[in-house]
Image 1 (cartoon, one colour):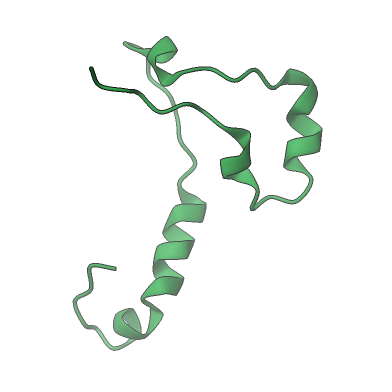
Image 2 (tube, rainbow, N blue to C red):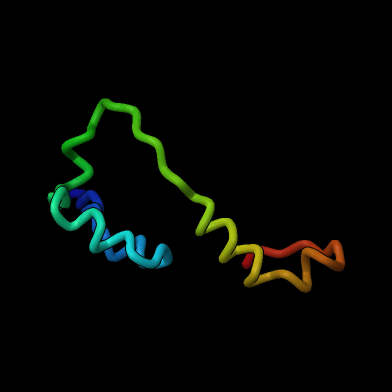
Length: 66
């Protein structure tokens, strides 16, 4: 059986003050609940972390898989 990830507000700790602001409306759920629906994901934080992780390689035009 394949487990689907669970949404967790702790994953968004990069935004100071976001957790307390959303706490009153936070309802943990399983992603399976959204099966067949379209959702949007703000991946800016992930892109930023990836860019920082390999900044030297990117600046030098080198291939990277970090």
